[in-house]
Amino acid sequence: MQHVQLTPTLRFSRIIQGFWRLKNWQKTPQELLTFVKQGLEYGIDTLDHAACYDGFKSEAEFGRALALDKSLREQLTLITKCGILYPNSELPDIQSHYYDNSYQHIIWSAERSLQKLQCEYLDVLLIHRLSPCADPEQIALAFEHLHQAGKVRHFGVSNYTAAKFSMLQSYVNQPLITNQIEISPLHLTPFDNGTLDFLLEKRIKPMAWSPLAGGKLFAENGHRVAEILRKIGEKKGETRLDTLAYAWLLSHPAKIMPIVGSGQIERVKSAVDALTISFSEEEWIAVYVASQGHDIP
Ligand SMILES: NC(=O)c1ccc[n+]([C@@H]2O[C@H](COP(=O)([O-])OP(=O)(O)OC[C@H]3O[C@@H](n4cnc5c(N)ncnc54)[C@H](OP(=O)(O)O)[C@@H]3O)[C@@H](O)[C@H]2O)c1
Image 1 (cartoon, rainbow, N blue to C red):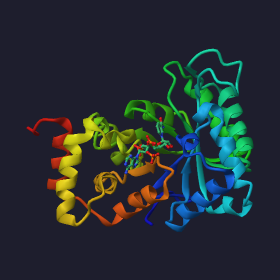
Image 2 (image 1 turned 120 degrees about the horizontal axis):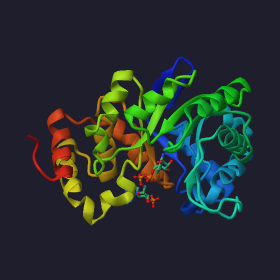
Image 3 (image 1 turned 60 degrees about the vertical axis):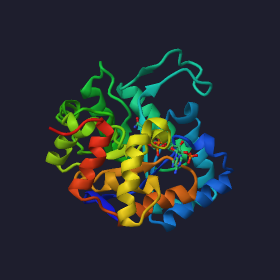
Image 4 (image 1 turned 180 degrees about the vertical axis):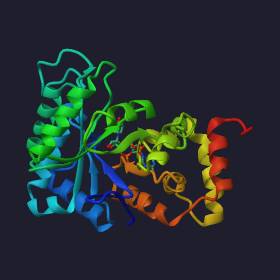
């Protein structure tokens, strides 16, 4: 497994495991523990959570698995996110869907994540989405507090534009270590709107959420892209569509770190195997052109 050094004290495995769909996996704590250990055998040591996944229940589910083998914690890099709220049975006081980027909420959410994940510290806390009326001074103060208390070691953001990233970094003392954004062969926006150019300029490595477009790659609307990926795969002796899509992302110079959404270990292996395949610029652009549906100028 390749690793990406984000700061002198933080590295991510190039392939990251995501837990948004944990509920669908229907795993017992023991099965979940086994799944995490199988991922570790492939070198996947970086795991992505969020406070709000599965109605604010998924962190606790993961925590129950981790509690079965506490020695695992030191081998893992745990990322979680805060700031999205919506009505749910765990937090009955929440009446509407909104973002809370306040000092109090960020601290409350990080401390709740620690408790639910049954951990002493978080490796990384991301602001899940920037509230359009967020006060960056409050975010900076919350990060400072959590850092000083030893509760969170590193900070970053998710779904930020370049301008929002720069703005927040100008307030925050700690380096923002990543931007977790949607990138896939069916979602080209970050290649074109300056988000990836900005991250390349700043030498910040992005995490890619929904790298297989949430499964749409395998459906009718992914047909055109699937066809070209398979054609290119033929030359490389690779028939797995998911492996080819991951390889396309991994071949981009921004050092994209895809987050695997599946709980099936053979599909996780498809992602890991993509590390051995590279796309030439000509092949890469053929997929880009198929996705946008018209030729480049
Ligand atoms: N920051 C954010 O705002 C944000 C938003 C969304 C997600 N995320 C993160 O990104 C992670 C990945 O997102 P994602 O789950 O949408 O990733 P994804 O890989 O794009 O989509 C996963 C979906 O594709 C299906 N799939 C995977 N391989 C397949 C195959 N070979 N054939 C058919 N279907 C296949 C999976 O089904 P199975 O489950 O049946 O394998 C699952 O339904 C999440 O877990 C979360 O950590 C972050």
